[in-house]
Image (cartoon, rainbow, N blue to C red; front, top):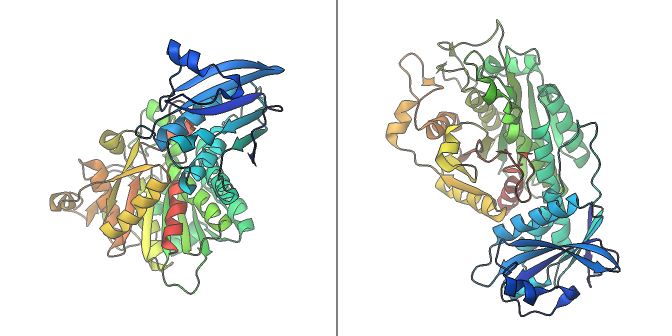
Length: 483
């Protein structure tokens, strides 16, 4: 599907149309839409978030979606994007090929600035995604083109918006791949195929090389699986004269059974998505290269499976780590933080990180904290957190900083080892503090996307499954770090 900007909206070749309408519908009766009659019957009033469908006869049938804008006080970018996603999905079900999208009336309630343009263009790409690769009777989408009309639309915003939308879609697609196919080795291969043609240096380390680095916590998680681990390191050195290096660490559990602390079946079904953080980092690295961002960004994924065999690490074990601290294993299902601490240590020690962000589907407690609409954050540096927060806000994704009290720091300590991987409640915070022990004094932000990385049903621009949570914000973060 391609997107074209048009100086004038031509519906002659369109079999689908989306028109954005403000709530004060004293507008021209464009396209023969019965707006006044709909307002009187209260079937469509133009409220923000409102979507109404109808069919017009204009030589041939045209499927129309009316999207409410509200007014200057009620207009909301997030609700507009969700409405556009719902409109596109509905028109696709009606087998339309060419959608004409009229954005002109947005100017009556809010300026269509560059940020909003990028959000809209990204949303069009994101709304078209479906994961049906393994359905033998699946049919390709009929949607071929969306023609967009509106004053002052910018081709540069279109190009960047499309790249960002494709970044989100690629992240979602990696997450949606079933675990029997998306093994650690396959994830490494796909990452290489994706970033190498873009000029990103990629290094993939095997089990022996990981062992030589002393990444014992990571290997403890990985050693029970028949599929060996792969450490994926991607380098975009866009500012070689700068000492500033942003390291992005993504949790890469391509499958998590829970290990010997095995999960119930219902909890294992979606555990292919336990590499949502890795998906976000890999996809973001590609976009950072495509946009030629002038920053040094290194993406790191410690990919592995948490499985069960005679080699499994056990509750009660004490293991070591690349950072030198010993760890008491209270639960083998608290495995993600073990892979992350070695990846963070690698980023600081080997890649000379000056700033670190780790992003991970880490704790079920994150869902209890903030539900599925926002990701909790733990950090050791408020200034860096505010930079990350601005990047997420620009991408229309939500994060929220959690408190770190001295009493919480005491919970990660253990009487038999330096640390424990199960510090108890508040689980999201203590898991973050555990990782922070290895970030030391380097500005670091931990983002727990356990609640935001996966959706049980389609909504707005998202289909069921992976959401690509964090992928676009990480690109915006790299842009901010380039300044």
